[in-house]
Length: 363
Ligand SMILES: NC(=O)c1ccc[n+]([C@@H]2O[C@H](COP(=O)([O-])OP(=O)(O)OC[C@H]3O[C@@H](n4cnc5c(N)ncnc54)[C@H](O)[C@@H]3O)[C@@H](O)[C@H]2O)c1
Ligand SMILES: [Zn+2]
Image 1 (cartoon, protein in one colour):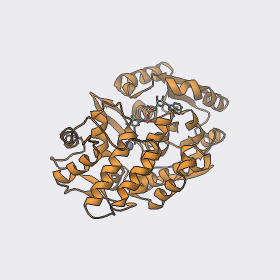
Image 2 (cartoon, rainbow, N blue to C red):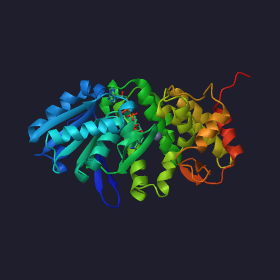
Image 3 (spheres, rainbow, N blue to C red):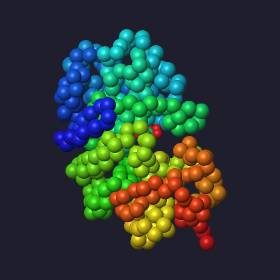
Image 4 (cartoon, rainbow, N blue to C red):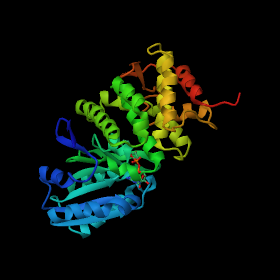
């Protein structure tokens, strides 16, 4: 088992990385969370595969173990589902000593975390992420929340879990397209913080694609280390944490244009290419980095070009992103590979050129 620590101003918690659930109950014991009432929150897909196993592990060590399942998918990430959680908690007498267990991907984690942050002004929760995206990104760092009136993550709270337990073998049941989406997020850390991690990806891409245990655990470990480092310095995104948005300003626009038919990580992958292109044009990194980025994403079957959208449409959406301040976009760019900075003086032309690059034309 590999262990990492996330240290924020107000809390410190471990991330455990394993190939099984064997260490799960000890993680609860170490955190002093046993002999309580626990409620596992999961979705309709994950419950079929992992709920029973996790339930049986927790049952002997808890006063009572309850579970609540909701329909899988981003469409459930709303206040209606949260209301159902609260009702279930009240009906089953969950109190401030109870613990919530998020078993699933980012949708489960974000919602369970939000419910934990708000029910009775905050109760303990733990994260057991089961998608690669949630294992390398969303389960770490304490951002919780729900979508509201069509706006992603519009309502939420910063609320840290008591621990994160990652069983990387859960990725074996995850559709490959979802795995690849998580890989794009992991590659992002190579660009913004850890240039050697990018080389690791290139050298071990075959093993990673084949879900080799050691290679995957290394990807997860390095991603969580990078995220923990950033979050430790800037928990509430007042500065440094914004570099985690590398590729995201472009990516979010493409994601919403696709009407969410493209996965978040797929759009982030294309956004990475835009970010690399932008940084090349700024003169900070060499032109060969564009092809390098494309070939790595391509290897994992991630899209590297888009069709059917115009520069104008993407541009417009980028400027209406909620992170845009006074019509000025902050673009995360690279001073060098492994070193991100915030460019707050990007011209519209520079942005349009980067968009143009990833649009496939028939000419
Ligand atoms: N809090 C943060 O910092 C943060 C960061 C990034 C993304 N997010 C959020 O995360 C969400 C996306 O997370 P996601 O990509 O994990 O999506 P998800 O939770 O919807 O999971 C994707 C799909 O995989 C299924 N699934 C999960 N684990 C499985 C497994 N082991 N085997 C088989 N199927 C499995 C799910 O049921 C779902 O259908 C978005 O709502 C996004 O806003 C949050
Ligand atoms: Zn992301």
